[in-house]
Amino acid sequence: MASVNSTWASSPVSIPGPFNPADWSGAGSLPMPGGFLWVKNDPNFLYLAIDLVSDTGNSPGVGDYFWLSFDVDRSGSITSGHDVNYGIYPSLPITIARQFYLGPGTWTGILPGPTPSVAHQAFGPSPHSATPHRIWKLKIALSEVGIPSLGSLTLPVLRFGLRVSSTTPAITTDFPPSFYTNFSSLHEIYLATGPDAIYPPGTAGPVIAGVGLIPATTISGGRATTTAPYVPTVTNAAFGGVLNYIYNRTNVTTAWGAGARKYKILHRVGTSGAFAALRRNWANYRITATNAHILESFGPDANDFYTLKDPALDYMTKDLLFQMDTGGSTGAPPLSTGLHEWKVELYNASNVLVATPAQTLQLFVDNTAPEVRIYDVQYRGASIAPCSIVTIAETPADPVRIRFRAFDPQGNLHSFGLSAYYGGPVTPPMNLLPAGMGGYPGGNWQGVADQWIDAPLAPVRFPPVSCAYQLRLGAWARVTNGYGYIGSSESTTHVTFLRPGVAPFASPKPLVVPFGFQAEPENRFVTVPH
Image (cartoon, rainbow, N blue to C red; front, top):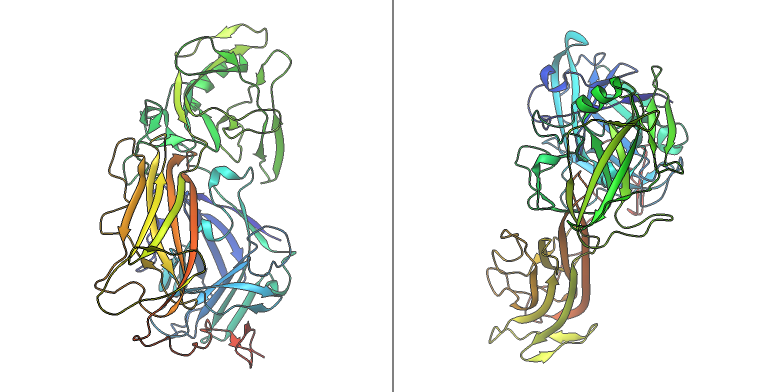
């Protein structure tokens, strides 16, 4: 088993086009048979360059391919329907394909629907070899491989296996060998949780520099707003979930030089009244000079002091001052919804206060998901009970009507959507909302408390064909944990609509198989070619 430390991508790495060494400057590098693996990440994506210096034949078409597998639940074994493999479609243009494992050496066909992940095939020199050679560039959505948020895991690590294959020269390499039948020895990528200098110059708070990747100076009235292309980009966002409070490295290093060796975390609800000592426990991995990751636990002593570690030490979550789950944790109740304030005081070994710039950090905390409910579905004035079968008349063309709620009392709604899901696995859902409805209009938006809409009659009438439909209402919170938006709710109901005058679905299509695989004889799943 080998491991590599990913480095932070301060801006998204360009995947299309030729290999550009500047895009991969400072990237983590892992030797592999026939080449090297370059690794970067940001809060949303893993960026990989598979630099195959031994593959000097620029084979046309899709004869050159890769498999990239992830142990999504990090269990060390293959989990059916959960662990994932990436490859390419069997025809040009080069397009990334995604499939689930069903067991050792067996997979689903290519999963339908869009994916934010991207693959590109390049050929040219790299810093590892001036001789032109094959280079694969990949962008993998972290949400697809078990990392919903960088702040959600103490040790954000990806366990992976890789196959690369070339037609000229004839090379097929599995790294590690036979990884697709046994996940016990997969290689590891330790994700970066932020840049070395976490915040842009001048944006950090004086002691609590920020929360996650959000600088303290972008927080006003307890809500955060950052501007693209900064990542994460959030607008008027409240805070919730597991929050990493990051210290100002410059000022804390100065305080360390002045003798600071411990600190207190002070908290109050609202904006007035006395602060009280906050007692929380968390863990962080210290990275040694030999790249060992050693788990260290943190918590207060009997006098509410936390030990201040030397700022020169390297940790997985850099400059972590403290961590807390606003939804509550063992021995700690959840925070109430509304404004909360924090201060930090540094002390020397003799419990004497060490001077630091004054700061009170204010956050609007929201632990509640948006309220969603489908109140009613009607056709021609009659309500439709769940699981009903309803025949739709072609004339007159009366719409199906839907009454629903997508509401956030705290005014922290980001968006909502209402769609109809039907048909087979490759059938896209149909949007039922009128144009412009459901998007964030600004301010402390609550959404809609009681809304009727008419399902579309044009350009495509709903329902488009005779089928069983799931009507799915989703709402997403404008709440951040410092690494992106979190929190959503969903409500569904099911109705079968009949359109007697409309042609039914065609026969099921065969499995779409990524290049390098084959469908088994009954077209039920995908296997390794024999």
